[in-house]
Image 1: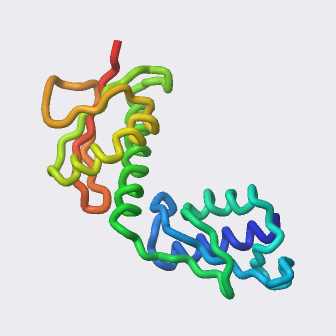
Image 2 (image 1 turned 120 degrees about the vertical axis):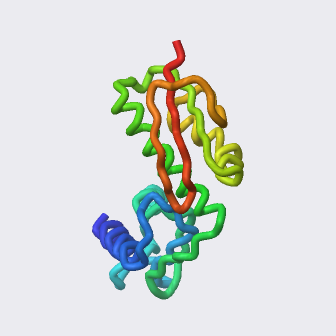
Length: 168
């Protein structure tokens, strides 16, 4: 567990140095390993159990962990990773809006978004993740009747208006 803490701490430091927030997923983290599978170096991944590697992936928010000579965080953000980071930030904003509006996790809601066409296309591609992550039943686009709560955000240069309404 001590090795896990060191790996996570160092990887998060690398994220901070690169100016990449933790909600932004990254492709991979390379962890030092030795042929013997033991960890004489500070970060060895040889004998770490699979569940501990999964814990590192979650804490550092990477898709893959690879053995290597040094601890290295791949900080290249592809368009798909950027979209996923945007969607995660959007989910956080929607959850915060639900809470501020006094909605409970069990309350059924509809989401409505208005933004640029490319932003709406991203939301359409990630609709299942958005609906599941916000416990919403449906997603709409454009303008319509007034909803319960609304907010304008701009994350990663994606300007967007979010509206939430309770479904009775």
